[in-house]
Image (tube, rainbow, N blue to C red):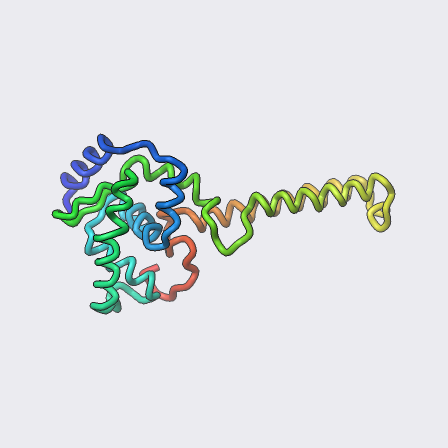
Length: 201
């Protein structure tokens, strides 16, 4: 794909970009294959050819290098992307998909999807629930110290304050690290995929 083609695709997609609603954002991110497509496009500078996307998505799905992707694996991914996922992303205004040219370009709207990554259902506990639970525990801890409940009454106030502060500081640091791993377009494997043992990561 030449720079002129990419530039033209970006310009056209920007002119046709609709406003991204919350429902559309959740729908775009709810499918692993669509997240893989967006991840690869961001890694590729916002534009890529369909055949390259197919090869990379198939490699990620089967945990192999792109060179090891079989014809059947490639065909299965190609059919799903061309007939379903890319048209859906295009309809949602997230990408500009030219089926005739076999090119896919991210629109400016795609950047808005990052906001929703933290609330898309995963196997982990949502951070909002984690912080709510941590807040309840810390409140109980401080209340126990304040009313003199053992063993909390044995802890000096300064130490108790330091422990609560440390709990939230460590949690925030872990949260930042988690978010960096979940960001689409980061170096390495796509979000939600933690396996892989080759240079194709």
